[in-house]
Image 1 (cartoon, rainbow, N blue to C red):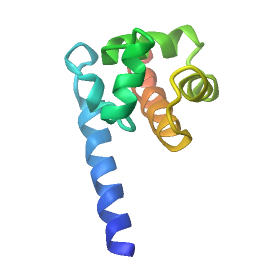
Image 2 (image 1 turned 90 degrees about the vertical axis):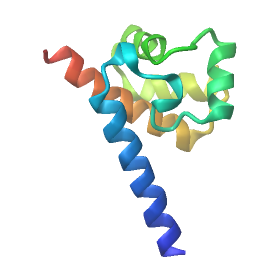
Image 3 (image 1 turned 90 degrees about the horizontal axis):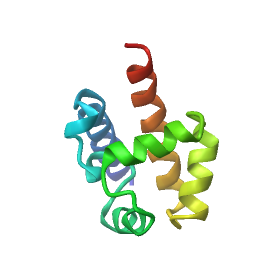
Length: 100
């Protein structure tokens, strides 16, 4: 269904735009693209309960999109599709933070 695919990508795009425009200190974990209720619970089990901690973990990994996605999949058992969305959103946010 093409329409369903479009609305899904529009939702993802809107969620990403909102996440990118929100200061990290104000961003909820569920506001990160790719993070839903199930992945948020899995992240919390790994002591990642805020968007700031998620970004901190990404920074510790040298801002590597690949390392972050692999960690999300291996340690937090986040599905590959979501892990890639989360990592891509963190790359974009990290680039903004580090270029200030």
